[in-house]
Length: 449
Image 1 (cartoon, helix red, strand yellow):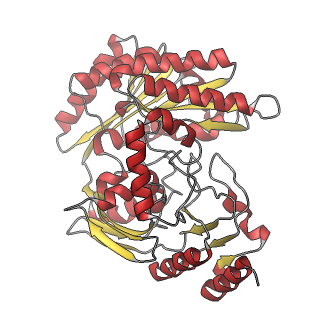
Image 2 (tube, rainbow, N blue to C red; image 1 turned 180 degrees about the vertical axis):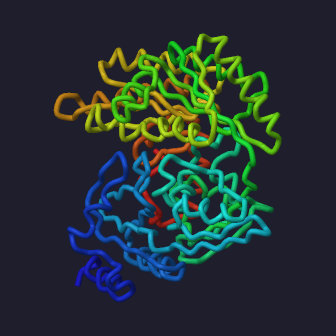
């Protein structure tokens, strides 16, 4: 009996029907939201940290790479299997326990982001990290990519809410550590499963702000919108949400939903919140005044229902773009706010130079932009698409930015890391990987070039 046959028998013995071995069962686990990989050798759906330990020990004995996966909504290929991999799907690890008095929650990696917020709301609490896929994305995936969302400018990203982390290391041992001394949890957050398999986290919850106010500003072009954002923040505005859509996005959403959005304009959506209604409205007034000074037409939401209708435009971007071209590469860069006007203009010019459809949207408050390259592989060269993606990444680096604000590096940007980091930094990262995963079983081929 060969090595793989022995491993198959052990997997069946440990997991029964939760070890997916037939080709049809494994097919869906080749994908994330952007990329597709080879068929995995097996897919395992553990239900406890003890089962994760057993799987890691089995994988180490047989030399099988392990690829952790949440809901598969990632956008950089971090959960896409390589050749000969076993996918570890955490969707059955869904324990969630709230401690309203301490304002914390303990959650396993398969708990969806939305479920944490929904469980907290009856206690007057909320969980701020809110990626666009929050209804389907899981905490494990959010931790692996250090995901953000529209609220990240004011409230921060996933890692900012982790008080304690539990994971299984490459030896199959469990660790549960807080962040009071050496911040080992901080090393694993954003590491895309390359240093260990995350099995749980205690996260911080916040009191729900009692007051909110929302506006939509329509600008003649994206550069003017970026200038207005940069100036408003320099003057002290710290809105809860600050999102933008370029004219191509607006056109797509309007075709999709027919909301009455102003075609040919770049849209800024802003929300302020807080304990003091007067302060909330003052901050919104500052944003409105700044937007008007850059030629924007501004509309304030009169109530919560109207505010929700405005935010629907932002949430509709992804399905709307799918109607323009069948495929897209969703770029994710972050740049200093002072560079925003120049960056969005350079990216627009790159799209025109390459002859490809590029649309831009994202969390403009913290400089996190999502340029999307839309294409039809039957008519347009995928090689050209990836060349454009590389050039967009270079724009970010040239302006003092980074390759990823929240989507991670995964497979998609792995090649770019040699340009983003100096050799000494790469050497230090590789040393950390070797120390924590000496056998190379933890999501190999991701993140580091």
